[in-house]
Image 1 (cartoon, helix red, strand yellow):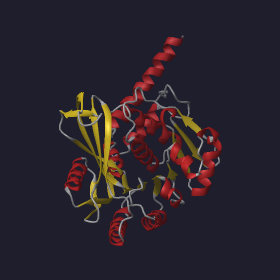
Image 2 (tube, one colour):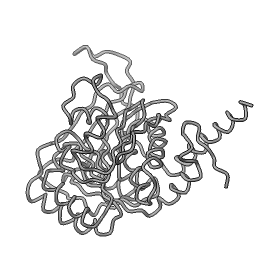
Image 3 (cartoon, rainbow, N blue to C red):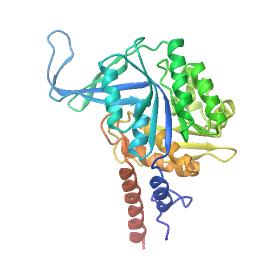
Image 4 (tube, rainbow, N blue to C red):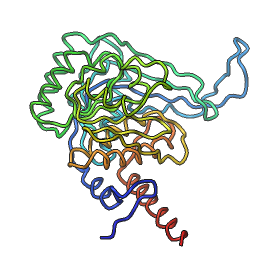
Length: 351
């Protein structure tokens, strides 16, 4: 079969290879461990300013939209792409927790690893949208470390689930679930079973994931981890290897927003993949899409570069959607072939 080249990429990968990888996402099983959230969107219009204070009055004109966020969004991205996901985390004994579990089941996510607890409410991020603009976000959460009882429950569930999985993703939002004991014991279990371990870290626990297969910080998180205050002072070719050495990880992907992502692997030179987004509407949840896509690809033995190219296409689709969103395998393949067709058209017009 003749290779179908992609417009923004070199000859190291073609659309046929990517299509094969995406088609094999089906039934790959990933356990996602981390902070589970419910994202709530309240939408309306603004026609006046409040007489009580110089703030807009939002008149709600749509029903509340409630979707899984945080680690739950990673799990939903996995199932949307055709894989299987089991979620390990906590929700509260409240309406938000029940709504979140129902929505996860509707999106084919296995919720057997979720602990329902009375120690804290379900984390909610409530966004008020007026005339397509976000005017305020309200967070309802408790970020203290989870109690010892809850740690034991989470670990018990994890031990039972990870045995049957192909990979583990840690999704850390510093909301108190990924305490050092949870991280170390699940890491040890996954390493002993030679599972792929992917990590989306935050500052507080950044260096607790030693020995992971892949670590995927954004540029801000990578800088914070090394105490670098001025981004102008950085050299990515030094930053990535420095972090990899500290983390003892096999690979690293640093996401850089509109600048795309830069990948590091072993002693190889870094490679930067430019973003494929056509129009950025909302960047919320893009990192979740990236780590879900990369991990699904790595499970089947794809190269890091191939996995990152797929993730870059997926993130480009996600940021074109409003709010936290998922990307399906069909959407991903369609975008790849559109990019390929564009390249073929450009080649023809050049002669």
